[in-house]
Length: 227
Image: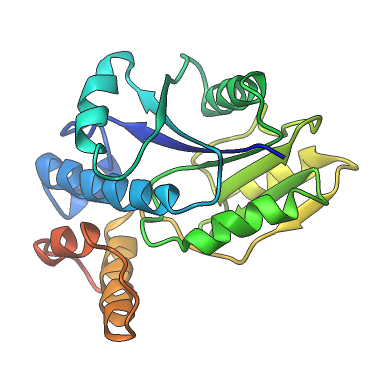
């Protein structure tokens, strides 16, 4: 069963990415951190067991920049995100992957730069027996969604960027079979970034090589306490 994993990515421009961090840093610092997140997540995606690995990029002219940025992370297929809501863009990337022959498709963003690659591999395993898979995040959304060919994607009419995203998605699944991954966390706010910094430090001490780019970027920032 052909597998496709797609990473949603933006060009890391000051003032256009990680804007919720800007209460604790400058727009350029937020863009630098997003760049680090993207590099770490792309390296994770590169380690996933999938036949196709996609960078779904925005804006339209960002392909050349992202190809240069991520050239050492691995070999990717680059597809432009369409205009529209996040749900419409997700559906378009899924349809494109299915059109290229994928039987199982997994989507994720770069807000969880230390997400274990084994979680993504586990998503593909769950999609052998389940129509859909979700990776819940602590902010009420999810860090990953996947589906097998023939499943109905429940991303229409979702109130994105709210704490109700997961709940609304569950309500839209209907009778389809759901596989569930462990809870992880997204990083959007200064306190979440502060927790990621401590978590990455702990993982380094425990011998886990993650956050190669994110931890140095975080160490340069003046962040509040995680709580």
